[in-house]
Image (tube, rainbow, N blue to C red; front, side, top):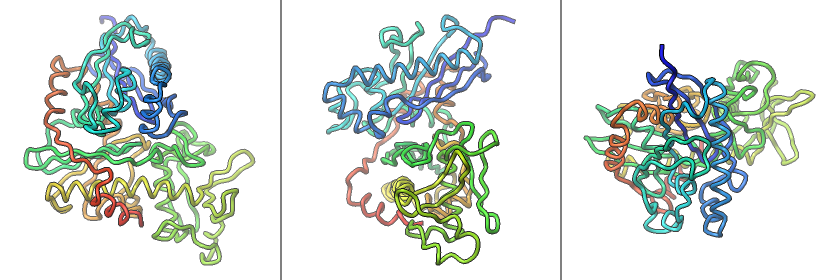
Amino acid sequence: MGAVKPLLALDLGTTTLAGRLVDERGCLLAEATLRNPQAEWGADIVRRLELARQGRSRELQQRLVAGINDLTAELLRQGGVSPRQLVTAAAAGNSGISALLRRQPVERILFPPHRAADSRGCHLNASELGLKFSIPLYLFPQVTGYVGGDLVAFLLSQGTPRACTLFMDIGTNGELALFFEGRWRVTSVAAGPAFEGEGVGCGMAASVGAVRGVTLDGDRLRLRVIGGGSPQGLCGSGLAEAVAAAVEAGLIDRHGTLVDPLQVPGPLSRYLARGAEGPCLRLYRDAAVELSLSQQDIRAFQLAKGALRAGVDCLLRRVGVSADAVEHVVVTGGFGFSLTARVLKKVAILPENMIERVRFSEAGVLCGCVRLLLDSNGPERAQRLADRLRPYPLSGTPDFEQAFLGALDF
């Protein structure tokens, strides 16, 4: 057997950086995630782009590069290989993150025409960026200022659909793609970081100690924890399941409001408490940890799921497709684990008649990066796909605003 020829795949998320190391056959050598160091300067990408306009672009880039270097070092450590052994590398991120990595002007993303100065896929000189490996880094093409290379990578991982299919990349930005009658329509919504375990009091990334699921079992809420043991926080899937279970138990009403404990008969009322911020849903407490969702945390989840649902509804209307006509729904994202049909139905992320058609694709963006790396014509295929994606802007449109207000309830 010859020496391993490792390939590096990177998903540059607004909240989370994720990476995989694979060999030339696509076999997994290592996998890791870490929080995007830029998140300390703003949970959303718009805030970071505004800071770049104010002269902080170099610092933002340096933070991102430092995060990529830390992530790469962990992957190489796990895989038992050195940076010199890397054969090729690819990364995908939204348009804002990609522009910050390249230190491109950000005005064209923030303002019309809402498109990066250079949106085509390209090979970057890793050493010049400050990355601690010498091979070029391929960066996926962007579509517009709000539909980025991460969606292109996810779609590349799935191949060409054969029927009407909706694709959803759920993260801090929710990116949507609809394939219908041989054509693509894409859009994006600002969901916020709740689905990635950020922006809520007890949120955390999907790692050991995170609550990945919550179910109602009689008069108890049962928690499923990554790695077993005591829970330390909620990742995105755990948050969604906690809200769904609380709605099912009658602890949260259909408008997203925590109910009065006196209105809950029986032992379930013990989960309703009063915290520092007012009423809360207390999921767990021991001597070291308390996991509670405040009313503000629940609202953050409502805003995220409402934006996604409104984006789906508007995209379908724009193309003239009914929810019944969508034959497949493929979902990926940084929420940690797949969500059951019961949870999707309870929190109303999708039209009810689409829920049974949902399939989850774990780490879809990374899979797309790996697929490109294993294909000698990968960059050309990615660019051809990006060129076929027709954008439909939603932000600020009356249609979206109306749909959003109607999508907040459970």
